[in-house]
Length: 449
Ligand code: AMP
Image 1 (cartoon, rainbow, N blue to C red):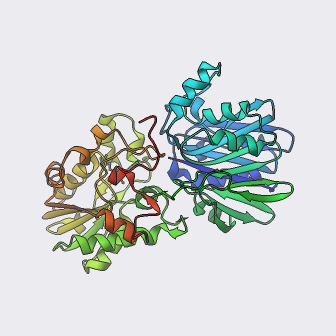
Image 2 (cartoon, rainbow, N blue to C red):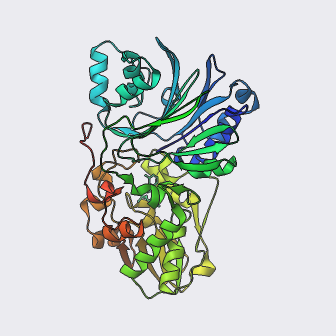
Image 3 (cartoon, helix red, strand yellow):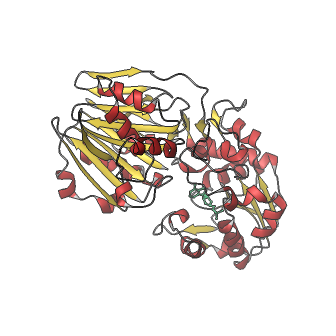
């Protein structure tokens, strides 16, 4: 769970990167960082916190040059500490380089032990640092050759940006788990996790960077190649369900329209007699609009979200998480009193949020609460860069839907089917998306798992 942004060929590279990261803030709120190149040297700034708090004018002025990469982080591997904040910047025999990674290497632990046995000294505990050591050891002549050699030894998910004094390199793993798009702003090229970052800076979307593609941008322009062995695609369906911003186009599709389609499909699969459809904001809104449309039950606002607390998952301790739901959501009594309410959310992870929400809705006078989830039961952890807890903590790993309904105290509970999810994402054969978090069918070996 991270966001990356890069730009090559613009006078205000670090300022634009700052804006791009701001648009990608939903992908990671723990830390932010930018590394810029002025053509001869790199300068970097990284700190814990939100983009708007990490950067200010003097900091951005200290990052001069026409090229920059940036990163917002939510840790999926390695602890929440500034030493793990990206982009990493190092000097090595080939010069200087910086790296920003969205994804997760599944064989990182094994690779780290191997590198440490050979004398490597790691500065962080993140999986990403392996790439730097492997690049530094590579005998390939050109920087991009070193990158290919390094990534050839790592498995898993990566949408990555590298910056040297003279080049910006973008690479996406062959399975294509995480999104990455290419855009243009005047003479500059822009690369971002999601199109919303391009939109903010008024860059034009050129295309997706393809699974397995490497793009190198320097003073001579842009070169594309496919240096890795092809594999069947496995774009992350959870980007569509929850993670990406609804105003983005991800994997060539509108996230908002896809979520709405999940809601329509859910209404078809699990209809219910009710007076009003409400969403758990913001994650359930698009699906709730689709559910209301397909069911004919009116959509209304039944929960208000405070914009001054982070996503529920950010708080590390169970005790704070419980309290956090109340800090984040408040019921609208006039919508709920004496009504049969359908409430839509995108997923149930541990079940604690849903339980609080159902209680909150009943406390505000709802006569019945029917919970509908716009994805299948989350029963398997993600090893490809989404922060899902271990199997023991996933309520659907060890409980039936009826048991979960009882736990969350809903009058009824139903999930979108796996087939329905893929069909609604325009993937009826289930061949273009990874849905391992719902099916347990992982697309790579799980060396760390
Ligand atoms: P829980 O209380 O653990 O069941 O959390 C469920 C809520 O967390 C839902 O409202 C989801 O929108 C949200 N959610 C699902 N997956 C994630 C994730 N990987 N990170 C943060 N929030 C999530």
